[in-house]
Image (cartoon, rainbow, N blue to C red; front, side, top):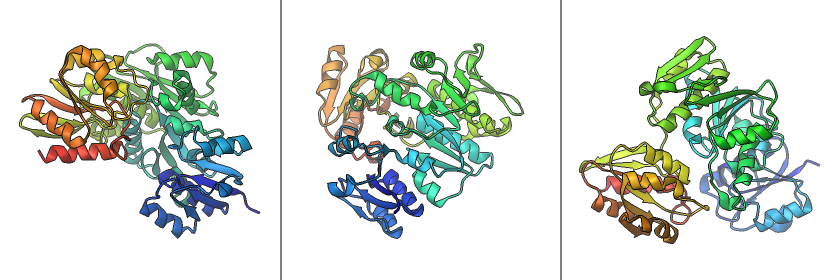
Length: 445
């Protein structure tokens, strides 16, 4: 009798895992506590995968040989606790797909910059003519692509939640951009628990694999003192210090490729801002690690101009620029956004707090922001923290209210920056929904 696999969650990740299980001849059942989107129902029906929505049939789940859990489901959920008590193996979609994957993988994680770096790396491999898929937090489900496609490479963006339930999976090239406090509500408010999740990107790597990381990150350096990394280390840094594989000294990006040294002025890059120098170095090292030539890497770095919801310029209205940085779901991400601002700022903050410490952006807010707009179901933490700074603020409870307030308080030459520091689930479906509504409201001004 074939193995019985239960998939929890009927979104992109869960649907892909269920289809892969079906294709591989396993006995599979998918269950979602909420409503499954129509497009996924259609896919599940096409592959004849049995499913349920708006609640779990516990007896059908607790008899599973193995459970594939979607990353959005927290470990403290009752059903997960029941499965753990039974000793049922619980894995991620990435772990499950990895068992059947034969392609090389470039896996990217970090608290900030992972989507930009993933998209840029994918673009580089594609521009070089490689047969490459895009998976993880962006693109289609990794499992679905393993079930239905035949790629030679995958570029995979991995969140800490996905890394949590990965055990045997191995990245051929792992990239760790940075580690700053995020999602602490999912990690018992202990930063070390979150750090441990991020470091799992290196697990199972051998001396034939590559580990690319930010050399200037103190947290990463501390972890490297504790962990024996077998993979070839390729650190990147802003400074040209011994041992770094890429640097951006004096505003010039520099690294070794298969056909010589690549040197490129930061001003030539399609992506602007200091944080994007890090992202560009990480992507370029990944491309060099799969033997892409320097001319091709240079061309991709020149032409790639960013991702939606990440410091995305929407438009100018009456001399005021509006920027959508809805993907800034933690404080450090907002810090990078503020650091790149060159004009006075009206800053829109707020959402579902994940145990945030706003001290990190306090000095930049003082220096660059003349009006704060809080946007959330509960703005009390933001009000309590920022009110003593004496910067005018407005509390709002919808995107329309927030954009209207920004329009009223912005002056010609200002920038209105949506960089929320928080998750979006109090008022929006997700950060994409938040960003789209921001753009709609701005364009309607």
